[in-house]
Image 1 (spheres, rainbow, N blue to C red):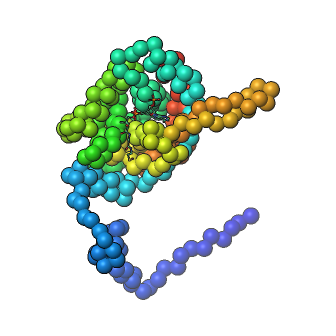
Image 2: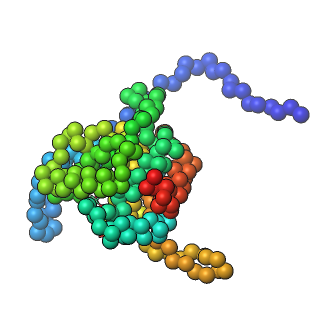
Image 3: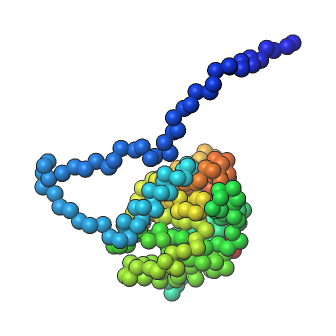
Length: 269
Ligand code: CAO
Protein backbone atom coordinates (compact mmCIF):
# COMPACT_ATOMS: atom_id res chain seq x y z
CA UNK A 1 0.00 0.00 0.00
CA UNK A 2 1.36 3.41 -0.87
CA UNK A 3 0.61 6.57 1.05
CA UNK A 4 0.60 9.96 -0.59
CA UNK A 5 2.71 12.31 1.45
CA UNK A 6 1.89 15.94 0.62
CA UNK A 7 5.00 17.77 -0.58
CA UNK A 8 5.28 21.51 0.00
CA UNK A 9 5.05 23.36 -3.31
CA UNK A 10 7.98 25.59 -4.26
CA UNK A 11 6.79 29.19 -4.45
CA UNK A 12 8.13 31.62 -7.00
CA UNK A 13 7.26 34.50 -4.61
CA UNK A 14 10.11 35.88 -2.40
CA UNK A 15 9.87 34.76 1.27
CA UNK A 16 7.78 37.15 3.37
CA UNK A 17 9.94 38.96 5.96
CA UNK A 18 8.45 38.38 9.41
CA UNK A 19 9.10 40.95 12.14
CA UNK A 20 11.58 39.63 14.74
CA UNK A 21 9.85 38.21 17.84
CA UNK A 22 10.71 40.16 21.00
CA UNK A 23 12.81 38.13 23.48
CA UNK A 24 10.56 36.16 25.86
CA UNK A 25 9.55 38.34 28.79
CA UNK A 26 10.96 41.55 27.29
CA UNK A 27 7.49 42.87 26.36
CA UNK A 28 5.85 42.36 29.75
CA UNK A 29 3.80 45.32 30.96
CA UNK A 30 5.54 47.46 33.62
CA UNK A 31 4.94 46.75 37.31
CA UNK A 32 1.75 48.59 38.35
CA UNK A 33 2.52 51.90 40.09
CA UNK A 34 -0.32 52.36 42.55
CA UNK A 35 -0.78 54.98 45.27
CA UNK A 36 -2.33 52.61 47.82
CA UNK A 37 -2.96 55.51 50.24
CA UNK A 38 -5.83 56.50 47.96
CA UNK A 39 -7.66 53.41 49.21
CA UNK A 40 -6.84 53.44 52.94
CA UNK A 41 -4.14 53.74 55.59
CA UNK A 42 -0.75 52.21 54.68
CA UNK A 43 2.78 51.82 56.10
CA UNK A 44 5.88 51.39 53.89
CA UNK A 45 8.95 49.45 55.08
CA UNK A 46 12.14 48.95 53.07
CA UNK A 47 13.08 45.35 52.27
CA UNK A 48 16.33 44.15 53.85
CA UNK A 49 19.43 43.82 51.65
CA UNK A 50 19.04 40.03 51.82
CA UNK A 51 15.39 40.24 50.77
CA UNK A 52 16.23 42.48 47.79
CA UNK A 53 19.00 40.10 46.64
CA UNK A 54 16.89 36.99 47.24
CA UNK A 55 14.03 38.50 45.23
CA UNK A 56 16.33 38.98 42.22
CA UNK A 57 17.73 35.44 42.32
CA UNK A 58 14.31 33.87 42.94
CA UNK A 59 12.82 35.77 39.99
CA UNK A 60 15.72 34.76 37.72
CA UNK A 61 15.48 31.10 38.76
CA UNK A 62 11.69 31.01 38.42
CA UNK A 63 11.70 32.59 34.95
CA UNK A 64 14.68 30.76 33.46
CA UNK A 65 14.25 27.24 34.86
CA UNK A 66 11.33 25.13 33.63
CA UNK A 67 10.13 23.90 37.03
CA UNK A 68 8.11 20.80 37.81
CA UNK A 69 7.37 19.67 41.37
CA UNK A 70 6.93 15.98 42.16
CA UNK A 71 5.10 15.05 45.37
CA UNK A 72 5.49 11.86 47.37
CA UNK A 73 5.64 10.85 51.00
CA UNK A 74 7.93 8.77 53.16
CA UNK A 75 7.00 6.47 56.05
CA UNK A 76 9.16 7.82 58.90
CA UNK A 77 7.40 5.95 61.74
CA UNK A 78 10.47 3.88 62.63
CA UNK A 79 12.88 6.76 62.05
CA UNK A 80 10.91 8.94 64.48
CA UNK A 81 10.99 6.17 67.11
CA UNK A 82 14.77 5.96 66.71
CA UNK A 83 15.20 9.76 66.79
CA UNK A 84 13.14 10.09 69.98
CA UNK A 85 14.98 7.18 71.62
CA UNK A 86 18.35 8.75 70.76
CA UNK A 87 17.27 12.12 72.19
CA UNK A 88 15.95 10.47 75.37
CA UNK A 89 19.18 8.52 75.79
CA UNK A 90 20.97 11.89 76.01
CA UNK A 91 22.77 13.64 73.16
CA UNK A 92 25.03 16.70 73.15
CA UNK A 93 22.91 18.33 70.39
CA UNK A 94 19.17 17.65 70.15
CA UNK A 95 18.40 15.62 67.04
CA UNK A 96 15.65 16.95 64.76
CA UNK A 97 14.54 15.20 61.60
CA UNK A 98 16.76 17.34 59.41
CA UNK A 99 20.16 15.61 59.91
CA UNK A 100 18.55 12.24 59.10
CA UNK A 101 16.95 13.82 56.04
CA UNK A 102 20.33 15.17 54.90
CA UNK A 103 21.87 11.69 55.18
CA UNK A 104 18.97 10.11 53.28
CA UNK A 105 19.19 12.80 50.57
CA UNK A 106 22.90 12.06 50.16
CA UNK A 107 22.04 8.35 49.73
CA UNK A 108 19.47 9.22 47.03
CA UNK A 109 21.95 11.57 45.31
CA UNK A 110 24.52 8.76 45.25
CA UNK A 111 21.95 6.53 43.53
CA UNK A 112 20.88 9.27 41.06
CA UNK A 113 23.93 11.46 40.31
CA UNK A 114 22.07 13.66 37.80
CA UNK A 115 20.43 15.34 40.82
CA UNK A 116 23.89 16.28 42.19
CA UNK A 117 24.82 18.12 39.00
CA UNK A 118 24.67 21.49 37.24
CA UNK A 119 24.37 22.66 33.65
CA UNK A 120 27.54 24.48 32.63
CA UNK A 121 27.52 28.02 31.21
CA UNK A 122 26.88 26.79 27.65
CA UNK A 123 23.84 24.78 28.72
CA UNK A 124 25.21 21.86 26.69
CA UNK A 125 27.10 19.93 29.36
CA UNK A 126 26.04 18.49 32.68
CA UNK A 127 28.69 18.74 35.39
CA UNK A 128 28.43 15.85 37.86
CA UNK A 129 29.75 16.64 41.33
CA UNK A 130 31.54 13.99 43.34
CA UNK A 131 31.03 15.95 46.56
CA UNK A 132 27.83 16.22 48.59
CA UNK A 133 27.49 19.79 49.87
CA UNK A 134 23.91 20.29 51.03
CA UNK A 135 22.32 23.74 51.38
CA UNK A 136 19.64 24.18 54.03
CA UNK A 137 17.12 27.02 53.78
CA UNK A 138 17.00 28.95 57.09
CA UNK A 139 14.31 31.45 58.01
CA UNK A 140 16.02 34.48 59.66
CA UNK A 141 15.13 38.06 60.57
CA UNK A 142 17.30 39.17 57.61
CA UNK A 143 15.30 36.99 55.22
CA UNK A 144 15.96 33.57 53.74
CA UNK A 145 19.59 32.36 54.04
CA UNK A 146 20.96 29.06 52.72
CA UNK A 147 24.10 27.88 54.56
CA UNK A 148 25.90 24.97 52.91
CA UNK A 149 27.01 21.94 54.93
CA UNK A 150 30.03 20.43 53.22
CA UNK A 151 30.88 16.77 52.66
CA UNK A 152 27.67 15.48 54.25
CA UNK A 153 28.50 11.96 53.03
CA UNK A 154 31.47 11.89 55.42
CA UNK A 155 29.64 13.19 58.52
CA UNK A 156 27.59 11.33 61.12
CA UNK A 157 24.04 12.30 62.10
CA UNK A 158 25.45 13.80 65.32
CA UNK A 159 28.09 15.83 63.47
CA UNK A 160 25.47 17.12 61.04
CA UNK A 161 23.11 18.02 63.91
CA UNK A 162 25.84 19.98 65.71
CA UNK A 163 26.95 21.77 62.54
CA UNK A 164 23.36 22.56 61.62
CA UNK A 165 22.66 24.05 65.03
CA UNK A 166 25.83 26.17 64.94
CA UNK A 167 25.30 27.49 61.42
CA UNK A 168 21.56 28.13 61.98
CA UNK A 169 22.33 30.11 65.13
CA UNK A 170 25.01 32.09 63.28
CA UNK A 171 22.66 32.75 60.36
CA UNK A 172 19.97 34.04 62.71
CA UNK A 173 22.29 36.09 64.97
CA UNK A 174 24.83 37.60 62.58
CA UNK A 175 24.02 36.48 59.06
CA UNK A 176 26.42 34.47 56.90
CA UNK A 177 29.33 35.17 54.57
CA UNK A 178 29.00 34.40 50.84
CA UNK A 179 31.57 31.60 51.34
CA UNK A 180 29.28 29.92 53.87
CA UNK A 181 26.44 29.97 51.32
CA UNK A 182 28.45 28.90 48.26
CA UNK A 183 29.28 25.60 46.61
CA UNK A 184 26.09 23.69 47.37
CA UNK A 185 25.16 20.74 45.16
CA UNK A 186 21.55 20.26 46.36
CA UNK A 187 19.22 22.21 48.68
CA UNK A 188 16.68 21.17 51.31
CA UNK A 189 13.90 23.51 52.41
CA UNK A 190 12.16 22.21 55.54
CA UNK A 191 8.90 23.80 56.62
CA UNK A 192 8.16 20.77 58.82
CA UNK A 193 8.24 22.64 62.11
CA UNK A 194 5.79 25.25 60.72
CA UNK A 195 3.25 22.99 59.01
CA UNK A 196 1.84 22.56 55.50
CA UNK A 197 1.11 19.54 53.35
CA UNK A 198 3.09 20.39 50.19
CA UNK A 199 4.70 23.35 48.40
CA UNK A 200 6.69 24.27 45.32
CA UNK A 201 10.25 25.24 46.29
CA UNK A 202 12.21 27.21 43.67
CA UNK A 203 15.37 25.52 42.36
CA UNK A 204 18.54 27.16 43.70
CA UNK A 205 20.51 27.70 40.45
CA UNK A 206 22.88 26.35 39.25
CA UNK A 207 21.64 23.28 41.13
CA UNK A 208 19.06 21.16 39.29
CA UNK A 209 16.70 20.18 42.11
CA UNK A 210 15.53 21.16 45.56
CA UNK A 211 13.65 19.12 48.15
CA UNK A 212 10.86 20.69 50.18
CA UNK A 213 9.42 18.91 53.21
CA UNK A 214 6.35 19.82 55.22
CA UNK A 215 4.76 18.62 58.45
CA UNK A 216 4.71 14.82 58.98
CA UNK A 217 1.20 13.48 59.47
CA UNK A 218 -0.35 10.25 60.77
CA UNK A 219 -1.91 8.31 57.88
CA UNK A 220 -3.86 5.03 57.90
CA UNK A 221 -2.38 2.04 56.05
CA UNK A 222 -3.88 -1.39 55.40
CA UNK A 223 -1.95 -3.81 57.60
CA UNK A 224 -2.03 -7.61 57.89
CA UNK A 225 -5.53 -9.11 58.18
CA UNK A 226 -6.93 -5.82 56.84
CA UNK A 227 -6.15 -4.13 60.17
CA UNK A 228 -5.67 -0.38 59.98
CA UNK A 229 -2.18 0.74 61.03
CA UNK A 230 -1.37 4.40 61.65
CA UNK A 231 1.94 5.42 60.14
CA UNK A 232 3.79 8.74 60.19
CA UNK A 233 4.14 10.10 56.65
CA UNK A 234 6.59 12.86 55.72
CA UNK A 235 5.45 14.87 52.65
CA UNK A 236 8.23 15.33 50.07
CA UNK A 237 8.03 18.03 47.37
CA UNK A 238 10.86 17.76 44.86
CA UNK A 239 11.13 20.66 42.40
CA UNK A 240 13.46 20.02 39.47
CA UNK A 241 14.83 21.60 36.32
CA UNK A 242 12.96 19.81 33.54
CA UNK A 243 15.81 20.51 31.09
CA UNK A 244 17.95 18.08 33.06
CA UNK A 245 15.57 15.84 34.99
CA UNK A 246 12.54 13.94 33.69
CA UNK A 247 9.41 13.10 35.67
CA UNK A 248 10.37 9.41 35.81
CA UNK A 249 13.79 10.35 37.29
CA UNK A 250 12.06 12.48 39.91
CA UNK A 251 9.66 9.67 40.83
CA UNK A 252 12.60 7.24 41.13
CA UNK A 253 14.56 9.74 43.24
CA UNK A 254 11.75 10.37 45.74
CA UNK A 255 10.93 6.63 45.87
CA UNK A 256 14.58 5.91 46.74
CA UNK A 257 14.58 8.72 49.30
CA UNK A 258 11.35 7.40 50.84
CA UNK A 259 12.85 3.90 50.96
CA UNK A 260 15.90 5.19 52.84
CA UNK A 261 13.81 7.22 55.28
CA UNK A 262 11.64 4.17 56.00
CA UNK A 263 14.74 2.22 57.04
CA UNK A 264 16.59 3.96 59.91
CA UNK A 265 19.54 1.56 59.65
CA UNK A 266 20.08 2.65 56.03
CA UNK A 267 19.97 6.34 56.98
CA UNK A 268 22.49 5.93 59.79
CA UNK A 269 24.89 3.79 57.76
N1 CAO B 1 7.24 17.15 60.60
C1 CAO B 1 6.96 17.22 61.90
N2 CAO B 1 7.78 17.82 62.81
C2 CAO B 1 8.92 18.35 62.35
C3 CAO B 1 9.29 18.31 61.00
C4 CAO B 1 8.40 17.65 60.12
N3 CAO B 1 8.67 17.55 58.82
N4 CAO B 1 10.46 18.93 60.86
C5 CAO B 1 10.83 19.36 62.06
N5 CAO B 1 9.90 19.00 62.96
C6 CAO B 1 9.96 19.25 64.38
C7 CAO B 1 11.34 18.98 64.91
O1 CAO B 1 11.61 17.59 64.99
C8 CAO B 1 11.22 19.65 66.24
O2 CAO B 1 10.33 18.89 67.07
P1 CAO B 1 10.74 18.22 68.48
O3 CAO B 1 11.03 19.41 69.34
O4 CAO B 1 9.54 17.44 68.89
O5 CAO B 1 11.92 17.37 68.22
C9 CAO B 1 10.50 20.92 65.87
O6 CAO B 1 9.79 20.63 64.67
C10 CAO B 1 11.37 22.15 65.67
O7 CAO B 1 12.29 21.92 64.66
P2 CAO B 1 13.32 23.11 64.22
O8 CAO B 1 12.70 24.03 63.23
O9 CAO B 1 13.88 23.72 65.45
O10 CAO B 1 14.50 22.33 63.54
P3 CAO B 1 14.61 21.69 62.12
O11 CAO B 1 15.91 20.98 62.16
O12 CAO B 1 13.45 20.90 61.73
O13 CAO B 1 14.69 22.94 61.09
C11 CAO B 1 15.49 24.91 60.06
C12 CAO B 1 15.72 23.86 61.13
C13 CAO B 1 16.62 25.89 60.13
C14 CAO B 1 15.49 24.26 58.68
C15 CAO B 1 14.12 25.58 60.25
O14 CAO B 1 14.04 26.13 61.54
C16 CAO B 1 13.86 26.67 59.24
O15 CAO B 1 14.33 27.81 59.34
N6 CAO B 1 13.05 26.36 58.25
C17 CAO B 1 12.58 27.37 57.28
C18 CAO B 1 13.00 27.05 55.91
C19 CAO B 1 12.31 27.97 54.97
O16 CAO B 1 11.98 29.10 55.28
N7 CAO B 1 12.03 27.43 53.79
C20 CAO B 1 11.28 28.14 52.80
C21 CAO B 1 12.18 28.64 51.79
S1 CAO B 1 11.33 29.11 50.38
O17 CAO B 1 11.55 27.81 49.45
